[in-house]
Length: 407
Image (cartoon, rainbow, N blue to C red; front, side):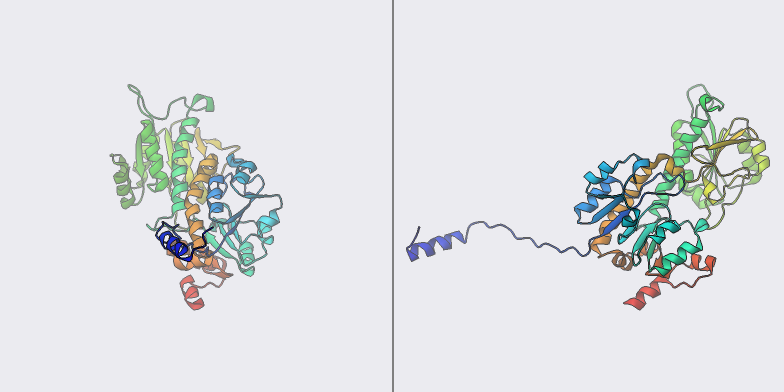
């Protein structure tokens, strides 16, 4: 032990020049999210809102995630996968719907809204055509902030969820058609595509949006001959540019379309309506004149379908024949590839939820992010959607004015 004061002073001066550990500023967490992932109960809904990898990311940011048991079962994710990712597995549905933030795929059922104590945030799809007024009023009465994920926009003004599901539906529709053409599906026994010396399959795509674009890409990739119809010249032009190759395109002229359908082996219905029913552009007589054993995949069926002969089918019994033409009219085609679709949803929402936590919660993100704000249809119990207000004859307020009044 050193007792000499001079020697001690000298050693202390030398020590002050030694390298020291850098002290970094640690930012405090503005708001930890308490997220509940319920098991989907809607008919044939196989997707799950968050995959285990996304849960692991959110937990690493200090957020808490509760997952209802068997939520990911239909997408081949086990409870063990979620618990190892840091989620708490719950066996009581009420516990899930008591979380501050409820994130699900399909709109909530009335029984699920009953379980919500109120003053929470709900993120799910909003299907205006089947949205019951009673559920909307109960969400309003419970002061819920409800966000429709199919109306959220990204920095480019694109609807990321709609586009992702459209990409999946477009590609999957061609894979479905290829299977239905095979002999073992009682089809014509032809391969969707083309090989040397054999005439390629004739594919008609009606609609040049995201679904039509990806159906066209998939069909061209297999070697099929593709014709694309749409009423928008700008969409057809964009499709040509995105494909990087020339394909037959045309506006929807009944005589031209009828002639193309007569020669086709596969027809993909990919028209979308901004609101309401999809225009029915293929008449019963057009279908009657198609080749026996040809395949129709009506992806637009969730909006009523663009074929006069279309009627809703299920994943269990997906097809029927009309005039010897095979019809596949299953809504929510993305659930056919539920694992891929669940990853697509998680890739979109993981950064959104992280950003939400950094902003102190849903209210903070709504205030600061215009694209996210576009998805809000109820804000703290106040209806902010003009469309829903007019459809159900309910009072609504513009969210921009609402936020200004709360500042």
